[in-house]
Length: 445
Image (tube, rainbow, N blue to C red; front, side, top):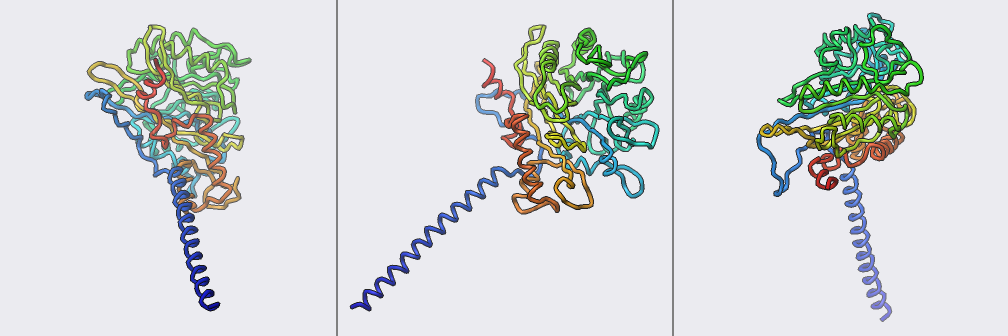
């Protein structure tokens, strides 16, 4: 009898262990699937052009339209380390590999823009901060990478003095790059008040650019050389030159383009929020007819915002402001200086009515990698990476040949920081960014 009971008990224990095993396996499988889902939610495919939002059945989409995709990058700050990274064994320079992760967004755009904080003097004595001087090969690299326009109005535009400023524009011209913000002659500045007029896919843009100053290098006697919006640019940098701005904005409106874009080199370095005068100027520029305001100089990102705007003529529209996109590339190590984004702006024009408006706005978070910060040895040191793609690759088991845990953690933190500063809604991985028509429905009464 005892033997029978022992047998029954043994069978019971085997069944119990089996049941527990099944439960544990199911729980484990569920946990694995949850982990996979979490990774999938965080991961993104390789960068692709911004998807066009699918209209709902109630939307009345115009059929006769012109579409333009703009890509805007931040400030190219060419420290000596960037030049050293770009230098090849034969003594030539090529910067394309450094710009890497932003490439698909730049090439997908109909018109790609960035700001250049360096000069091309007639010398081979290249230098970084405080007087930036770079090889002309940077211009050919930017053109080959896919850029169309270079904003030259920055506090470093006079780093090689007037002759360097002139040669910089000559080099840009030789490489087929548009430019705005600095000028060789009074006649060049007088043409359209220095405004770059560009027709892209049948949509016309007036593009203006201004800088707060020139790092106290005077332009006395050739004031036309740089669009400086501070009267006291050599001293306290506090007195905004509204007479100049009034004249240039009036000239922009008189051109009757479909949109006005204003690029501003402004704000306080290392501030992730705009200061009072940036807000004051933003309100002023929108009232004067600006549709898009693109800021730089601060070396760190600042917020991106859509605005319901009523200009001085009573026109109502949705405007866009990016207070600062930060450093596009640099060697800076201060907090947030390795964070930036490619701002992608979809513009649409209704050919039948002539109305032109923002269609979609998104940004692609970028991270400037310096391998030495993470104790990594490789045949390269500096690269700009697409944060979303790099994080996703590492999570899928691909370390891209160099990513260690320290770099990965820094990228994850960097993505969180960009979201907190620039707004997570605009991230291109968040349903393609912000559909402006939907934003208007939710935010404009």
